Amino acid sequence: MSSASVAPRSLTRPVSVGGVAVGGGAPVSVQSMCTTDTADPDATLAQIGRLAGAGCEIVRVAVPSAQALDGFERICAGSPLPVVADIHFDHRLAIESCRRGASALRVNPGNIGSWERVDAVIDEAGAAGIPIRIGVNAGSLDPAFAEREDLTQVEKLVGSAASFVEHFRERGFNDIVLSAKAHGVPTTVEVNRALSRALPEVPLHVGVTEAGGLRQGTVKNAAAVGTLLMEGIGDTIRLSLTADPVEEVNVAWDLLSAVGLRRLRPEMVSCPTCGRCQWDLMGVAAEVERRLAGVRAPISVAVMGCVVNGPGEARDADIGLAGGRGKAVLFASGEKIRTVDEASAVDELFAEIERRFT
Ligand code: SF4
Image 1: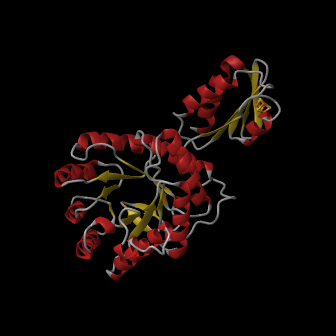
Image 2: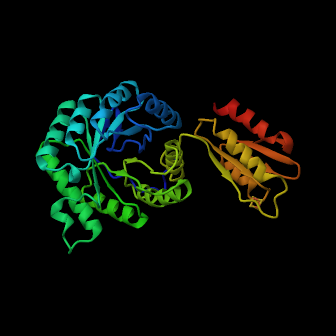
């Protein structure tokens, strides 16, 4: 895809999460997190199957207690995606997850309890050969920074992250991904810019945490993560939504497509219509969008209201329709194919998509 307007990606030290490269110029990977009970591996694997079908590349699963470990092991064994164990508070769960098949750990050193316990986790991950995502958030900063009144919140987050990274490195562990999450857009952007400057070699996992429901969360993530990606910051993304996690994956792909970094599915180009429109563009666009959900080709599909911008947009797209009175012109790969009746236009469009792109 064209990335003419995206800043060059920061070159970070790559790590492998179960075979998916994160950092080092690898494509920005899409993550999500299961909402199912880890102690119910059948339900969790079913959800992972849906996430994989939507294009998720790395999945995170909570390991909240020792009762979840058997389920976690079965999930790792049956998952088509690399599974990251999400651990808080209890370092023994992190250690055991390494032994049960985790492809990576996500821990927050600030809530593990002591450096000795963090070190035990580091050593076990090192023995298993898996990376660790170091999570930092306002609620669990390095104590050396938490009480500093002379520092801003962003400075505390970055200072904590830098001190955690330094500790891991001193322990001889370099397979690190870093995340510093905030629920506000300006803070998310500011802290990730600062991390990228302070630790330019460490891959960043970016996203707005606790972003809200589907609409508000999509807007917040698009604003913050879109800004960062356009600046070349971010190696892997998780767009948190209070919604079916499949929606997180759909939104992540739409965002990657919108900023010109990756495209998995079709992108529809459609006008808002106006008083010049002479066909049922709203209805046609809704039907095209519905049917495009089943198409995996990374193509652009234009659906335009009239001849003012219609033919131009339809020509620029891989395929498209430009409407007129009861008719539409079908374009593909920059060429006018034929004029079709409005009633059969969508069927003709999809027949052409199938013939050319699938
Ligand atoms: S393409 Fe035509 S109908 Fe659509 S917004 Fe532009 S002028 Fe209006």
